[in-house]
Length: 143
Image (cartoon, rainbow, N blue to C red; front, side, top):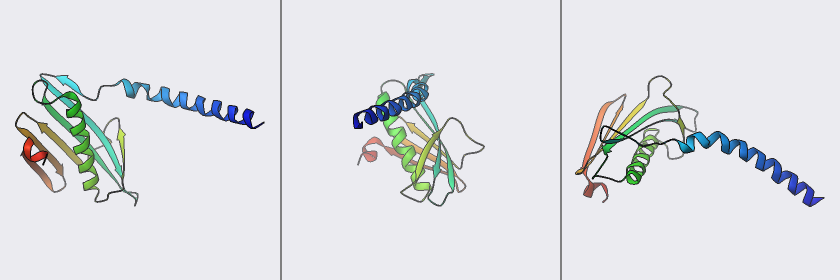
């Protein structure tokens, strides 16, 4: 009886996972990084939810030369790291939920632009306080 229950439970869980996995198949096959006009480009949209129920909508964009500056893997890793870190920082909380969304819902509360070049990186963010930029050579970024 225990074996039958376990088999039924595994089959039920497996069928649910199959449907869920199928729904993510399109997302898994999509390229986050696109190459256009000699540049690697990435744009993502997030909803950052705080514990108190308030949300922050974020648009993050990054670009770098497609050849000779940074690998596609490192470009994507740095884009994700910087955009998530800034999103958490602007929420003024460490324990936030960050959910990716397909497109903006109105205007973003925070715009993040990351420009990677051979000499270094510039991070630009725009919020209600205006436009702020941080520019540094790669040697300072990795200190």
